Length: 191
Image (tube, rainbow, N blue to C red; front, side, top):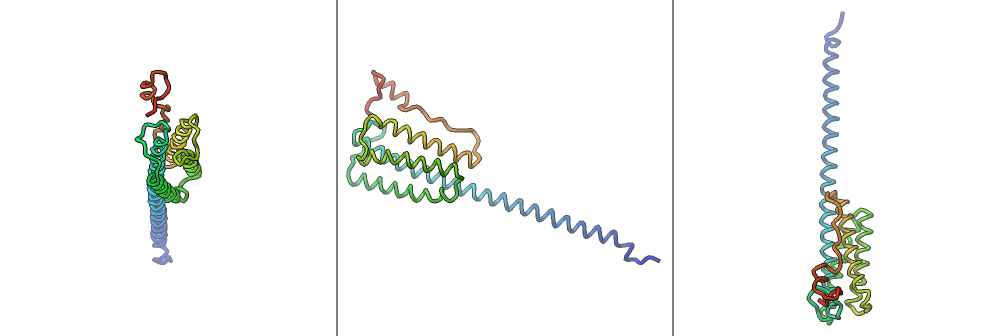
């Protein structure tokens, strides 16, 4: 004689297996969703850190270029007299860059951090021209070029880290063609 429990055992086992599979599926789905959300949050934070860092370095570049132009180095920016006010603006921009560096150092992947470091080290030479510590006119264009190449490398690394498609953005020639076209001898004019 069989008991009613034995007849119901397959149904109970089926309910137990179903509950276990439902729990496992829900658990795995939630864990996957949590990971996606966490990755999206960190991607957004990295993107913001990279953009703010790029903006801060660009400000230092702009101020330093204007001051260097005020010291007589040719550039396509409006010159700024190398007085105490200009040097304070450069120092302030440098402070912004230093503050923007920390999130990059914290959140960036190693390749992008290395590229960011190379960019601000290339920028130091530009700042030294602005401060009057470097004065070699024959090296000025290579300093500008090195800064642009370092910037482009940083953005290339940042784009790869963030999964931005489209490849590297090419570095334009220096001086630009329109400036070369203005000079009758082929030498860039003082702009």
